[in-house]
Image (cartoon, rainbow, N blue to C red):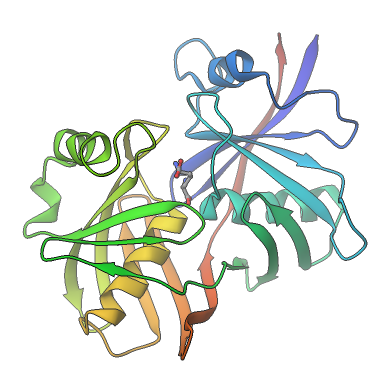
Length: 261
Ligand SMILES: N[C@H](CCC[C@H](N)C(=O)O)C(=O)O
């Protein structure tokens, strides 16, 4: 079977995207999805997304996300931003989108060449001496470090991801360094990629909220430098936690291709 795919990247987090509105591919193609994400035997990507038909009236489409291990996973913030850009490219939307992903409904808008993706509200942030833990659509362990640029993200990240209390289920692991007022640098070890990625959207969202809740910033707008580029997170503190959370950044179509599979 010949399969048309599109390659997108959002601050270096890269994805294979397939228009699956005809439902040609079923979700249990784990081996195929892992192969397509393989950087030697396939196209190569941190994850793969299917754009599918909406399941209800308000939605423009449905998002289905798979990590590069081929398994369907929790929400991908950078992926969601890329899928919105893809939907606009296909003409499924103009510049505004409403879609459903595994963590629920999302609204998004394309403005001045950037994709604004509304993330789910966050009502709980667990605070520990060494780190914080919260779920921004995916689970995130957030810890501050010095000299981030030389930090052993892969080995230390892997240990945390597999150790207590995460074990098999795991967590994404974000290492943060403050660079200025409302400005942080982040490197992320990503669950399901099982390596450092150049950027993680739900991860920088988790970092922004963590920095605010620990008073490392008093701004409800945080800029985050990742190795793949800069993202912005805006949010509002409410009596229930954090709402109106937006992940803002670029999303680019890198190439289109056809693969025999
Ligand atoms: N690997 C993550 C999902 C993708 C998260 C990341 N790519 C993002 O942009 O949010 C997990 O399994 O929890």
